[in-house]
Length: 254
Image 1 (cartoon, rainbow, N blue to C red):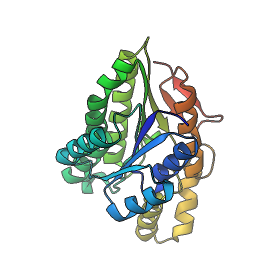
Image 2 (tube, rainbow, N blue to C red):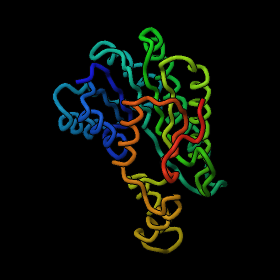
Image 3 (cartoon, one colour):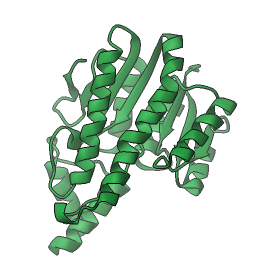
């Protein structure tokens, strides 16, 4: 049983839930958050009685502050921070408004930035830790109809790289894991939107999204969770981990 506490955001479903399952099974003490209170409560019950759960919409500064305070008062400071919460608005550039951009930037950049700022001093005092962002190949290249999402994921990678450079020479790791399209509700919603826009079936649209991955298919949430667990356990030197490469690898070192 590890004494390390891992905080996973967006943990009530999809990639976040898969990551929480893996970390719990590996013996980490777990803290989870999501804006969906009912799903979060269900996840906490299924993950085990010792799991700390706190509902929060991480696009709101007051919710972030509430999460930090509640965690410190209950379970303590995390040694592992997994910033996974995300959204993926889509549409033509002309139809991508400021609200879509602001929402994407708030969840993919400002919330991770705030949580890292809050918990990094504790990691520095301990002399070790792991800060991991669930990014995307959309942070490595551009995809049509996802300008707000791509911009936010590029920003997330910029923050991760800068932090890795700053933490060089310490035992605190700054990682970003970049899968391609993953079989999640978010991807299914995107496929549904494509299907409606282009007059095709949702299944065909899902297959087309999978074909855009370099591996030629959708990633499973289990594959992403396995990569996250490996990095949390082994903490190799590296920064941006491309899960869509063959084989998966770091595309650069800090």
